Image (cartoon, rainbow, N blue to C red; front, side, top):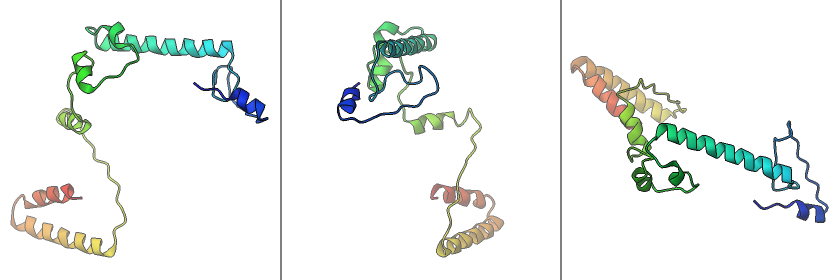
Length: 150
């Protein structure tokens, strides 16, 4: 991480850092880096890394944790080969696969319609009502089509 503390001092620029706690900001790009601050930051990073390794090992006991906990990143196909993922799919595919197992609640926001949109929506509503009163099940089919093109 670059540190601009000396550049700021040389150019007589003050940097004020306000925190609530001794270790709130141990190393920043604009303050003097102390040995204590560096050690605290390294200790925190090490603790987080160890917690990460424990979590992965709990969820994936067959994975060689020392091989995968190196800080590297992989393509999805490589992660699958290493046993880090079960399947490769898009987020839409994943959510779609959960629809049968979960209760899905649709949340929508309505945007203000202009006069033409209101007129078209009103006409479509009348058509749906007229059709559903004459053709059983047509109302649901039309509503499904309407939702798809929204």
